[in-house]
Amino acid sequence: MTEIEFLGWVRGTGFQLATVIFIAGVIIRLVEIVMLGRKANLAEPGGSEMRSGLRTIISRMIPDKSTFQRSSFTIVSGYIFHIGLFICIFLFAPHILVFKDITGLSWPSLPTPVVDAVTVVTIISLGSIMLHRYQNCVLKFLTNTEDILVWIVTLLPLVTGYIAFHRIGSSAPGLIALHILSVEILLVVFPFTKLMHTFTIFLSRWYNGAISGFRGVES
Amino acid sequence: MTDLRNGKDKTLGEILRSQGISRRSFLKFCAATASMMSISPALIPKIAHALENARRPSVIWLSFQECTGCTESLTRAHTTTIESLIFDSISLDYHHTLQAASGHAAEAAREAAMRENDGKYLLVVDGSIPLGNPGYSTIAGISNYDMLMETAKGAAAIIAVGTCATYGGLPHANPNPTGAVSLNEVIKDKPVINVPGCPPIPVVITGVLAHYLTFGSIPDLDHLGRPRAFYGNSIHDRCYRRPYYDKGLFAETFDDEGAKKGWCLYKLGCKGPTTYNACATTKWNDGTSFPIEAGHPCLGCSEPDFWDGGGFYKALSMPTENISKTAVYTATGALAAGVALGTMNQNKKNKAHDSHSKTTVSDLEK
Ligand code: SF4
Ligand code: SF4
Image (cartoon, rainbow over all chains, first blue to last red; front, side):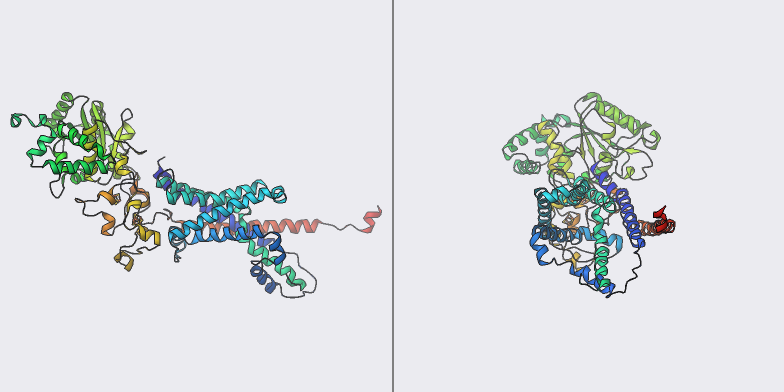
């Protein structure tokens, strides 16, 4: 297989397969979760579930003071790499074209050197998060294989993207193909791992808020 | 004396002089060739000396499944340049488009050239070789494959000119009805110098010839058998529109403001980022311009299978298949499957609930 054939495969068949697994996996899991439902609570409601639920989705974005003091590193680096990922995925011109091709929607992009710099920052913050995990004995104890897998498949598209952009070590078609392949691996792994939090985070935050709302307490 | 010698015995220097090319412009050509091929300037006198004293090498040019565009590219220089004279200075003993003889007389010329220059002649090939059926393409009743193998045997060096000979090209495009293959796929015992492009840049082939005449060896090749000197950089890395790419300024259509301002053509399908060729530096038509300068995205013609790259006007990062359709079908199917599974889960839960009987005091008393 030549580099160009490899690129052709990841842009064609590979992309199709990854899309099918990703979409089917995410939808089936979400529908199953939603359909599980909750037991009817026969107690008298102390407040609105919906309002408290929605508020919690937003309010949990800002950590409370004591939590922040306890785990400031995790929170700051967590924010940095999530925002970094968002910028790299959604604000790089060639990526926007992919979304445009699939959904018809398009939006302005950031200059390439900006995305390049953000990529480096994101890679560094992901690296330091893993280091931190192993330096903290509680976190280390809690770390399992899935955590490592998820970390690797998230990091790979960033690293391969950076390498492809700067053409390090090999020629462009092969490097771009590797980058697309790494994204396809991420898509395939996504529905089966905790990467699902991208979607379930809002459900679970709403749920937490709703429980408190029902009881009439602050969440 | 010199005039009495037949053309084959003349040295290249003599031929150039008889064409009125001054030594000064000849040296300029040598310097340009050296810099183009990343050869140290200290070697320019050596190149000049070697080229001047080179005897006209015998060249056999075989054309298989091709469109003659490559020959056109090489022979239709707008003005007479030293490059084209270098090309004229080889002894083209067989080229069925350019030679006067045809049919069996032409074949006799090829056989004679092979015999007289055994082990010394250069073999240039354009066009792909059909393996599906030998009858798909024949010359004087000889199949392309047989003619290639027979002629390749005694060749000192083999040059595949154009994308068809280097990768199969248009005949090899999906579904490849003739079973077309490139030279590399059938010639395994000798290195093939690949000079891809649809067509290749004329000066690239004269550069390869000049290298061969000077050093008697083949130039440094990349992993696709292309001379690194010409195919070492991607179009994108040498493109004058690159600053616009970096700033995120793109032409969205062929006639919008961006297009008029000369912004990057990435969104219009430019394959410059994955294409290795000398267009952006050497340019076309005696250095006039290259396609991107004319406002058209690079098609990627010097890379394998560029016909099958998902469309010339589809941006490189876009998937080649219709993913929206796949996504909609998958989502619909997944929704149905999700509901079915959810219902099954509910039934299971209900059943468990129903079959659950509470422990009563009498149970405990038993
Ligand atoms: S026009 Fe093509 S080769 Fe030039 S910068 Fe844009 S994408 Fe790269
Ligand atoms: S710009 Fe691209 S497509 Fe055009 S001739 Fe050069 S390599 Fe081929």
